[in-house]
Length: 379
Image (cartoon, rainbow, N blue to C red; front, side):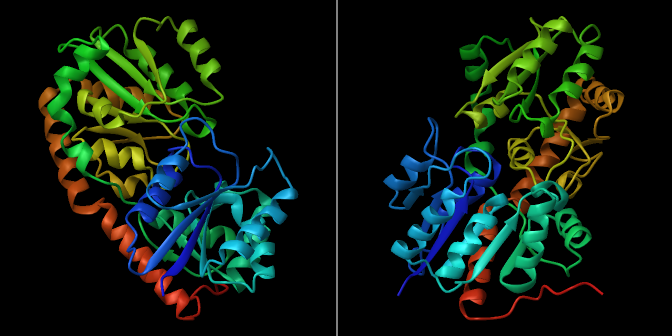
């Protein structure tokens, strides 16, 4: 009989961890597993929920309100009682809402993926709850070596399982073939140098440093244009900074887009100035599209990018460091081409989603077979 695997996520907007869940659900071995997904919030425009349902995946929306919402405990308990999953796979802060419902359901096996450095995943109270859960009931998974190290620092527990993120490489490998058509369609010329950042407008992504760095370069790189793909609650602040720096004609806000592969394929340099990260899919996608990258050395990013071969690593929050990296890449088409080729080769060798999916399914099999977690209090 197929085993039911129920993923629990904050929402189903197509961002990082949600797209990891998309891969785990849509690429699951359907002979062995029947996947389902719980979203804490109601469906929003652009949600992946309807497409998952069209693919035969059971999707539940709990209607959670912003902030702590105790009503969600009952909603979660109803889902577990009615759908009766064999294993729960939680992501981000949702573990606090799942544990009481899981206890009422007889405590099925629980796997929890830590998608960011552990000190940034949840607040102090959440960390206390997670530590208790990891000691007794929950199998933790880290997505990068640095995430695993942060887990040990925060929770004082042994090394969690390690399963790096993966992506579907197919659309990115072919993206550069449409470079000219995309530029023409969007109003950019072939001789313009397109720098692109694909990230939500949130504090973590640190667009402020990127805009300050780009402002340093605007006169020496008159053909450079900066594309910002994404949306979020800091969009207004980003727009104000663009105006204050006099960058209105040089920066294009693309909004939330479905054609990220096309955007990357038409661009020349990828940049991500994050203050913290786990194992960002956007960097993997840029490398898979053959772009040289200028990214901050945070979280698992240095495990993706070989600095000086496939891109350049910068200091987080350091305007001059980021500007220097962008200047170096912008100054040499040959360097960009060489870095891009190395980036694509590294992506093809290491970032495919199938290895990630099979590793999680092996972990599910171990937990369903009743093997105990290797997580213990660190000495």
